[in-house]
Length: 291
Image (tube, rainbow, N blue to C red; front, side):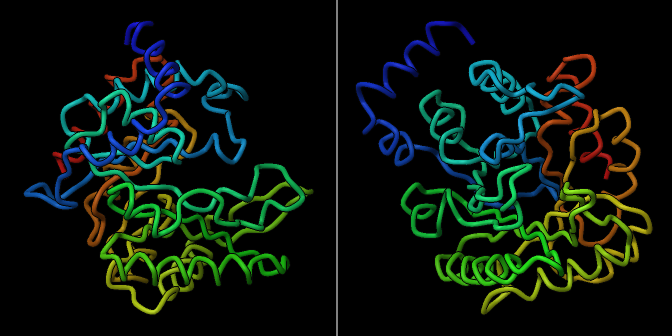
């Protein structure tokens, strides 16, 4: 992207805020599923929780222009189906014309700021169901961290359940990302054992008045076949922070298991070890095609 594109973006943000809604209304949409049996969604909702680290660099995502440049590169690669992001990033990319014929999933609850005393209080501070409909997006994603010793979990579960119900009423996908979590020496950690993931899936898939439009977003863990047997819902695999070199083999195996419908990956593809975003994305697309 050239500097004049970003200069125009900043000017439109300041002088013509109405163009965000205009760009959303004009966006060319596509069906959620097509002839391809697997989806690749690029995720970019970590910054809104204050989580800026990637590839060992704690401030890797601090520069918004550089992040947008990486996102534009990723979204332009053949085989990339869409984006998962918060309103600020979605709107930047709408104004840059990067989201035509893409699935766009809005991130909903970003209130659990990384490292905060209230991190388990995952309030809905970004999209809600009505705003997703108004913007013409294709679904909403919610983080659902279940901490048995933290009373904030009850409010998170109730809010996620309400969001699932409202999204379904509008005919939109609800992408639930469940984790069995706790604080270890003051830091929030996810239990990635098969048993913990099965517990998290069991709770997450039961949220809302219907699960008809619920998809799950879960990590690749040990004994993945057993974990996936805990649900009949469509499953998207998340990527996490490690670079794709270490993830490719685990993705390859998991993508072949029943119920898995694709990948939702952000930092692992946007900040690969060799900094070649296009090559990292192409490698992930190749896995999807092989699966």
